[in-house]
Length: 286
Length: 294
Image 1 (cartoon, chains in turn red, cyan):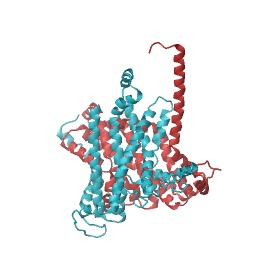
Image 2: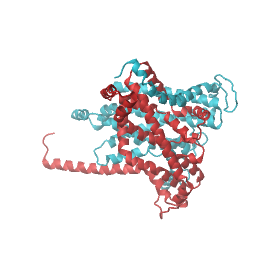
Image 3: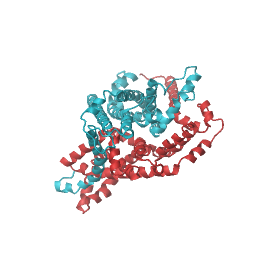
Image 4: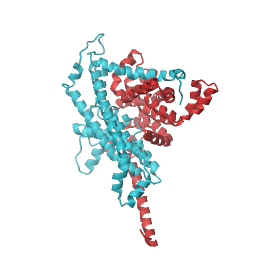
C-alpha cells in the first residue's frame, strides 16, 4: 500500500473503530444472552407460581418474596451448608497433603518403584468412579462408612491421582539445591518437604484447591449414594430433597436453587482470576 | 535430582497414605467388579455361584441394556461434535482486544460453575412440554406448535445434548483460548503478506495449531459425555421410558436398587473397557495429529 491520503486514512480508521465498538457491544449482549437460563431462574423466583406458569418470560408484576420465605422455611440450609463446608474443606486438605507427599519421592527419584507408582496411579486416571460405584458401595458398607462424613471425605480423597500428577510434574521444576542444602544442614526429608518444597509449589496448590473445591462442593452422585440421613446432607443433597418435596411448585423449587447457587457464585466472583489462570496453565501442561 | 537407593527408602512412606486410600477405594473396587461379574450374586445371599460369561452374554438379549448402550454412544458422539463446533469459534471471538473481554470470558465460563443438578432442573423448566415451558412459550408466540421436548424419545435426547452443550461450551472455549494465545503472531503477519484471507489463515494456521487444545478438550469431553449421570437424572430422569438412560444410571440402578451385583459388575467391566478403548484410541490419534501438525 503506497502512502494513502490523510483524509482517507482517517476515515478508514474511524469507521473501523466504530465497527469495533459495535461488535464489542454485540459480544457483551451475546454473553449476557447466553446466561438466559440463569436469568429466568432468578426472574421466576420473584413471581408466584401461577404467574410463572402464565408468563414465564415476562418481568414479575410485583416483587414476590414469599417463595424465598417458603424455601428457607423448608430447607435445612445452615446444617447442609456447614456439612458441605466441612466435607469440602477436609477432602481438599487431605487431597493436597496426600497428593503432594506422594508426588515428592516420585519427582525426586527415578527408579523401578517410582515408575511403578506412576503407572499405578495412571490406572486411576482412566477409571471414572462411575464405573465402579457399586463396588465402592460394597466396600464402604464393609468398612461401615456408609452415611458418614468421614467415609465420604476418604472417598473424595482417594481420587488424588490428579493432584499427584500435577504436583509431580511441578516439583520437578523446583531446583534441587535448596533441598540439598537443607538436608546437609540436618533437616529430615519430612521437614525439608514441608518447609521448603511445598511453599514453592503454591501455584499447583492454589489451582487444585479451587478446582477440587468446586467439584466436591457441587458433587451429587457420591453424596447421593453415600449419605442417607438428612442431618448429614450436603447443600446439593438438601436441594435434591427439597425439590422433591416441592415438585409441584416450580417457583419455590427455583428459589431453593437460587439459595443453593449463591455460595458458589460468590466463590466464583472472588476466585475468577485464579480460575482463568489455572485453566491456562492446565491446558498448556496437558 | 536425588539418587542413592538407601536414601530413597527414607521417602517411601511419603507415598503410603495416598497409595493406601487409592488402593482401597479405586483398585479394590475395580478388582471386585471383575470378580463379581462372573457370579450371580444378588447382594443379599450369603453365597453365590460362578456363572462364567452369562452376565456378559445376557447383555445381547437385554433390550434395556442395549438401548442404554445405544443412548450412551449417541450422546458421546454428538456432544463432543457440537461443543467443539461452538467452542472453537467462541474462543476466536474471546481472543479479542476488547476491554470487556475478561467479562465475556467469565460469563461464558460461568455456565460450567453451577451444580449439574441445578442446570438439569433449570433446563427441565425451559424444555417443559407444556406451554409453560420457556421454549414452547416462544414457539407459540411465533405461531409455531409446541414441541414435546421431554416426552418424545428423539427430542428428549436432543434436549439433554443441548443442555449439556450449553454447560460446556464456555469452558472448552477457554481451553482453546489458552492455546490460541500461544500462537505466534508472525505466522499471521507472514500469511497476510502472502495474501491469505481470514478464512485461509484460520484453516492453515489457527486450526492446526489448536491441535494440543483439541486433544485435551476432546478427551475430557468424550469421557465426560460417556459417564454422564446427574444431568439426565435431573432433566429427564432417564425417560421417557429409557430414551435418555445412560450407562452410569443403569449400572447404579441394577447394582444398588435391584442389588443384582453380578450383572451390574459385568456392565461395569464392559463400561470400563469401552471408556478405556475409546479414550486410548482418541489419545493416540490426537497425539499423532499434534505431532504431524507441529
